[in-house]
Image 1 (spheres, rainbow, N blue to C red):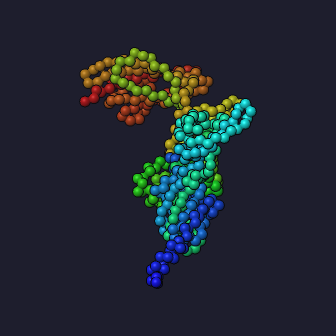
Image 2 (image 1 turned 90 degrees about the horizontal axis):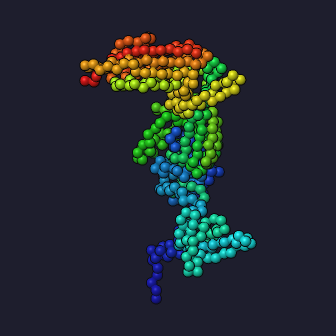
Image 3 (image 1 turned 135 degrees about the horizontal axis):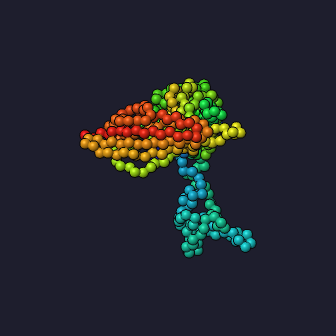
Length: 463
């Protein structure tokens, strides 16, 4: 007679007969999104804050957040509102032709070949052995064949591998939540950046200008960001060590969105909040107006400088003057670094491109100087006319000839740089000294005329 089952045996039997049901995976796509905001940096970096509605979660239930960046820095990931996180995984094994071929290496699949003569297609079973460039090696009927990928050959795959996905996704498990609630997923990601491009339009007399700045946003994250609030951070930041990412991420995530486009001073940077929500799709470059200043005073300057070296020089040097524009950022917003393209009207009033340059991050009240190019009508010739060695110094004399071929008067800022202590012995025109290693003259050259500057300097030998 069999002994009766005790309560422990009954429990074990129940476990074997009725195993625990595995929790079903909960997919959460962009349709569950309630809010989306991004902070974009100049350095291929962005901070994403994505809020989605989640149902009540069971402990350990897998949740798959779709439509996330494939360049997510997982060490910066923060999930709030979904319970205590047990584990999190970024899935970026994306489905494409190459990944399918890699999966079927050493496996059997169908090979289709189209006959170019009659268009008929034949099928045969082959084993894929290797892929190299645009050719593949297969085994068919115990023979090894090399076939070209594409053209009249194609593979037919028997099924889709479960581990290959069409879009990047984030999978996590938590200790669960008692009720439906919104959850915020925030992370730093590569693939997001922005740059500044300016158009500077001069008026007819070149004394005032209009400055328009466009921010160009780039998205190479593998996902679309629709109806998002954008903030653009102007400034260069150092990316911290991995253990410091999360603190930086949480601090940035706490920033409140500004209501307008005026920049907000944030730490040592400036934060621009775009006033309207917009969409930035994958592989998209989008331009948005960010800076607009009208009727700014501007000054056109002609400059030339050269270096005095204590040695004999018998050559006659010829070079054009450089054309510069100078203005002060007098508006109530700083100018982010970017490229500036300058246009000026011709005699018919049509704007013509006259030169470009780059500006650095420029705070309010700071001066901006742009080198446009060389002045066609203003040429400089210089020659050393004296070189004499003395006990503890060298005596050098130069002649600088400036020609103005234009029909208007010009003014040239001439600067001379020295590599060692110097003193001026003689100058045919008044000099303005900038610092110990540089001297400067202002030369007024009448239209279709010339000016000559002669100066003598003594260079003291280094001790």
